Amino acid sequence: MSSNSDQEVWYVAYGSNLLTARMLAYLEGCTENSLWGPHRGAKDPTFPRDDRKIEIPYPVHFGGYSKRWLGGVAWCSHYPLSDGVRSPVGRAWRITRDQLADVVAQENRKDTEEIFLPDAFPKSGDATQTNNGPIDLLISLDPIDGIPALTLGSSEPPSPGPPSSSYRAVLAAGMSEMGLTSAEIAGYLSVLEAKA
Image 1 (cartoon, rainbow, N blue to C red):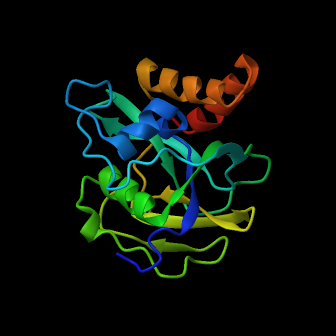
Image 2 (cartoon, one colour; image 1 turned 120 degrees about the vertical axis):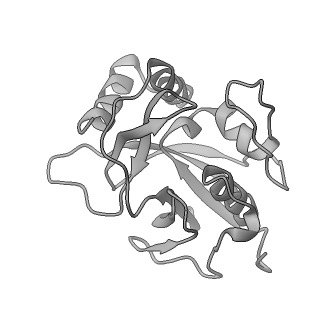
C-alpha cells in the first residue's frame, strides 16, 4: 500500500453504489444471504466522511449481463459525451485511497494487492489502468474542495443491455437519497438507457 494510504479522495459512483446500503457492502462487508451477495469489505470499514451529488462528464450506459442482477449494469467509458447528451448523475463518496483500492478490487473480484493506484492521481480528464479486470480504469474528474475526485471506468465496456427492474430500483433509490425528484430520476435513468 502507498505511504499516503489515508489520503482523502472522492470516489464517484454512478451505478448501484449510488445507494448508501450498497456502498457500505464494499466497506463493511456482507454475507451471501444479503441482497448484494458476499463482500469481504474494506480493511478500513469507516463510513464515508461526506457525500454529494455531481454530474459525470463521461458516457454511462446499461450493458452486459450480470448474474447477480439478472440484466445489464452501469458502465462508464473514457471518452467525451456527445454534443447535446445529458451528463449522467454520480454520487461522490469521501473516503480514503486505501478504501478506494478495496472498492476497485471487490468490483473486479480481485485481492486488493492486485490493484495499482498511482502515488499521484492523473490530472483531470486523464485515466490510468488499475488492474486487468472488466472495470480497469481510474478516471480523474475535477477535484472537489481541493480533493481528488475519481470514478471507475472500462477500457472495453460491454455491448448495451437492458437492466433488470431490481437494478433500476436500486439506482432510483440512491438518486432519491440524494434528493432527486421522481421526474429527475426518470430523466437520469433515461440517459443510461439511451444505448440499451
